Image (cartoon, rainbow, N blue to C red; front, side, top):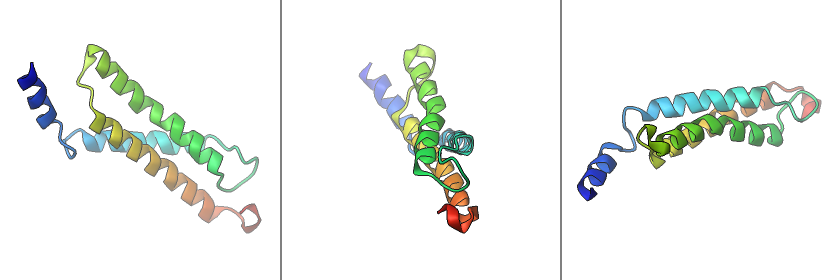
Length: 107
């Protein structure tokens, strides 16, 4: 069992083939969630929209790893880290675009 665990751990490197998909999908979820949650009540960026969008955007990646952990796949902390990074980047891009395009009085 120890050898099997070691070989699985070696196969799951930080730059594995699936890591780009984890990052990309999570970035899309983070961006979509941040875009659809306008908490400020007006145009422009709001840190609460970013925080809630990033949190909601992270849920699919977290759910996928929980599904894997329940015996339906290979759970990976590295996948979860790429999910978190992608979610933050996606939410951050939306927040930055909102900041750049907001009217001057909305800041």
